[in-house]
Image 1 (cartoon, rainbow, N blue to C red):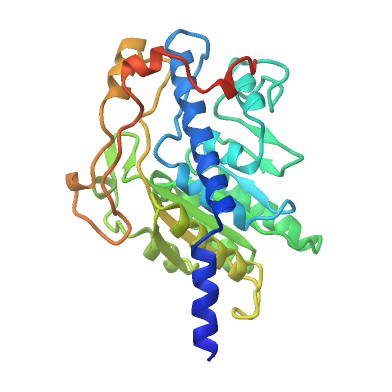
Image 2: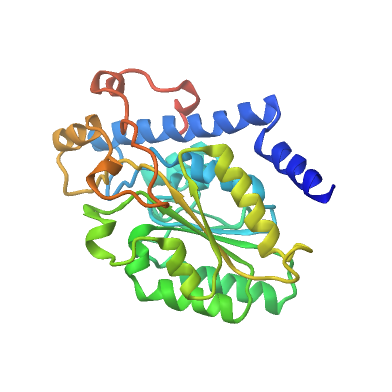
Length: 316
């Protein structure tokens, strides 16, 4: 009887209502359209500095955020446009920040890689690979010392697992039983280096478990799968009756991502990259973390030159 009830509850969580499904789709489309507009503006010099696109990973941010409450913390990487939008930061404030304008979410001082919103407890945007991991542990520790019932979600890429702070942060979070949800957005490549070329152990879940942090792997291209896994993880992290107390957990989401755009790349070269397909999982051996082939990065060049979603027009 209890197992049947648990299955019904899981099914209800996995299958959203029509309104919820449309909202998930709307959020993913908003992220995609903003990123398409951003790369267009970058190629004509309107956005300067560095630009890291979230195209291909929309389902991860949109799937995780519904599990978090307004009192929870979110820490992201330098590829954080999607997480900021999914957290509720207005698209206009995000675009204004990339323009370097005073009405940007970081008052124009952070740019693409440093989006912050104190009111929404969105703590960046960190340009250093793995730099957000110890920040997340510190936020969770501060909440614990102040007896605040909050969860800290920390997004990072597979490249960050090669950094020392990955192991140090997970170790301290497990040791102090801090309510941290570590979300690894695994796109199989750290910049241009395949995961199997820089890690002897490519199963990131096992890496987390080695530090005492239980984990789960999920298809990051499936927003409903991510949504269900994130809710399970947050319930466990927050001290649901099933777990018997607070703990840290890791969630590894396998997803595709657009190529990096940086200030030393000419516009023509950037467009050539944008027109190409994402890296495919066939270039390396598959494992339980790496699933699904990758979709195209962005629409064709002629689409980039045309009008992009009107909701972004006149935001800056």
